Length: 303
Image 1 (cartoon, one colour):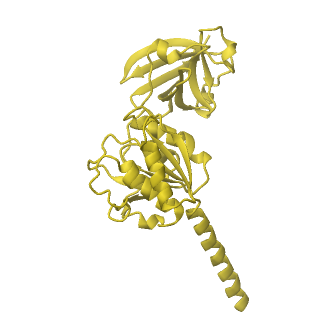
Image 2 (cartoon, one colour):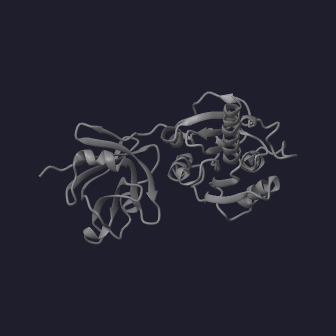
Image 3 (spheres, helix red, strand yellow):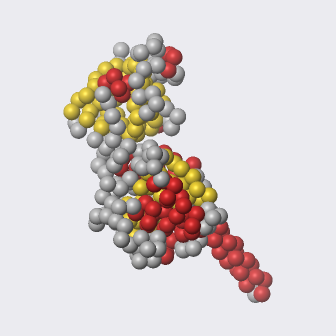
């Protein structure tokens, strides 16, 4: 019996140790649409360091186009899983700052924390990573001291402060605030699906440096068309269901498989279906953008 209790106590100790180390990984990753021309990003990091100088602070990006909630949602999904479980992300793309939109922290089923306004920013990670729990930030407790009269910089006064306290172990997840239902505000978009012999999807993002068009059509879904390199793919792009582009492009392994300036289809570094011009800018040439209102349809051209 004594041996049983010793084993049980040891297991309990290991469990608690794991919980402590998991909660106090001390990493905070920042994302915003602030840019780096002024001191906004530095102010957020200063607040975090004021909570604990032991924190490790990193940037996801601060070049989200102003007010572009969709791109914030995409960049989170693109990045979160590459970081260790327990990492705390702060995402501040907040055109509704100071309004009734909720300030929340979600814990994903992968064990990551995201501190953000609940305005659609969590659309993609909620679906791909799953939500373990959602808590509304209690600003009576989790707000930078003497900031109550500031209504337009919650990234500094609420989100950076709360994230730092959570990452440093000054609070646990339950102390963030009241528990909410496991749901978040979601932006509508075309989910990737096979309809007959056509695959429909969303234009998730542009490869901004080169103008390549990246979609949410996975390589596994694309494989259902049974493509081989050299097959011609018919591509139709829509904005708010209005056709913007229609054309054919070969499915290629590399950009150099087609002549300079010619279109091609390929799987990008995330193994998602994409469209490009070799040494050209597809998005600029055909006035294609990305976001929840942009969609694409593809099918294999049968010879």
